[in-house]
Length: 251
Length: 251
Length: 78
Image 1 (cartoon, each protein chain N blue to C red):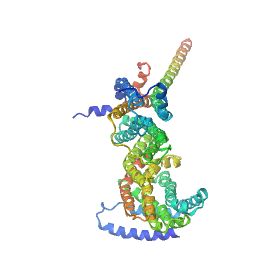
Image 2 (cartoon, chains in turn blue, brown, red; image 1 turned 180 degrees about the vertical axis):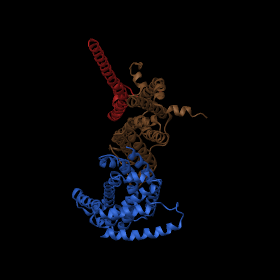
Image 3 (cartoon, chains in turn red, brown, blue; image 1 turned 90 degrees about the vertical axis):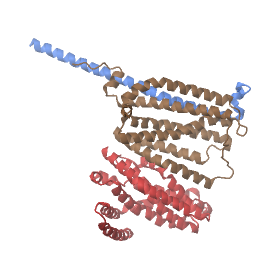
Image 4 (spheres, rainbow over the protein chains, first blue to last red; image 1 turned 60 degrees about the vertical axis):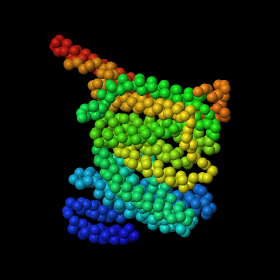
């Protein structure tokens, strides 16, 4: 239900954006971006399990952590930012495998690639939807997990903001890996192997944001770096994914 | 300017024939420099007054670390040349460079860990440089795993070349962020700053070893490339003749 | 420049740091040798496989030639 509400408000926003787009030159408009974005969002809302499973994974594994390392509140609160961030990394990665898979298998990815327009915008639309259905819910859920892991009160807001910014970068970077491995039969572990090292900066600055806030410093610089990473990733990652999709389609 | 040499360079056959003349020189020079450097470093360089004899590991650790990083760029650049100019040879070089680079990264990690025991009292420290090396090792493993995962050779070539390129964009970011992360968490008991000045009597053997490692790298890369050329071009006439098949007779 | 150790034994002991230094150098030599030897071994294997393949092709060609020859004699007899 919640996801449908999100979908409605977003499609309204998309319509107003489209109305603005009509005023522009036909070529300046991003062709097919909004249509694809809306379709993807509807599809994602229909496949509930794709949204819910990463979240369940996130919560379940985090619930295992105190069982593994002990229930001492001080230790848990020290480890909380790192644990939550690593779990967000894994949850994003696991859900990323299916990013292009369905489209690859039913041939619509090939149709997209055959269009005269660059693949950049279709990829960006898909990644945006992926982020809306995994990254944003993860960030929304993070205060609950922070509470379970005894996170300090001043850490909640930085955790949420850093997760919102960071998971968008994770979705973008992971899309490159998903596009590279879409033609393989069992990409799961390989995807983790090739993408995990690329996640390192996001992880460092994500946990750094929360840690700075917990230590009583300003966390603006770390957030700024996360934003810079997101800007670079948004510019380059869809390009790399588009190239990777073309390579995969040749296979 | 004539581009003929450039296109000739793309032909595996031309490379195979030319490189057989280089091989003995490269191999001989590498062996000479490496053996001189090892004897010099182990026996004739003076003992370090602070670290004792364990500092002699520097003569293999630093050159290996240099080449581990340079090797990644060599791999990524040859992959990029392959993607842009569709050159067969450069993909072969890229694939040959991956295991060599991984082996050198492993050497740097291993010697760093063994050096750490007498110096810091522990084998593994999450020091910025060691951590970056470890991530570099994972990047190499990712490229190797991806290139081997495709059943069609050309797809594996292109996909791993793209991944290597994405890694190149990320390496400076990863290095910087790991550096920042380490200064944040640096334990006060470990002072890892090295003396910036090094006595010439210790420096000359180091230079010798670095030059030796570079030559060795060039030699081994040529050897691996030649082997892979034979493997890939096994059906062509020139390889068949090279391997001892009779020239085709007009039937 | 002179040899820094009094004896070969002290050279191996390295003032107590021997195990670390020699383990590192040993590992490096091992890895470098493996790097240099694997392509040579693989080339040898490729050559061997190719020779075998050549022999098979040769045998097949000879068999085909013999078959066609015997066929021709059979036709001639008829």
